[in-house]
Length: 172
Image (tube, rainbow, N blue to C red):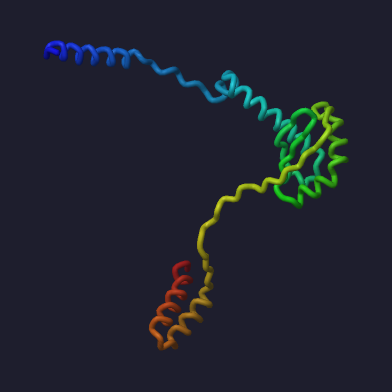
């Protein structure tokens, strides 16, 4: 291939890609609320979430105040209401009240064809805390440890006690 043709191809590629890149115009950004209302998949998800929130409010109106924070609607399909409960204690309490709860919920139009309530235990996800031991030493305790360290002849033990006494001094 000749040098002239190679230069022509490089120039053509450069112009072609540059023009196509320059011609690209990004779509204008739309507000998230508009996307949720107009995009079909998002609209369906939002509608489902709103239905579950409405069912949750109806359920909470029939639960004891103490149980409301521990019981959530997971699914409503074909007459079966699936509830997620935070622990076995609340699941047991709600199972004992299942017939009463079912009768009360059937009075609502949304739960008119309710035939079964299913309870599932799903403990809440707990974020792991700080790993390690935290020490809270009062200044009196630090003074006692320091006076004990002053009377120790073993240098290793003495240094360890002084480090321990220093924990309270750092916080003060």
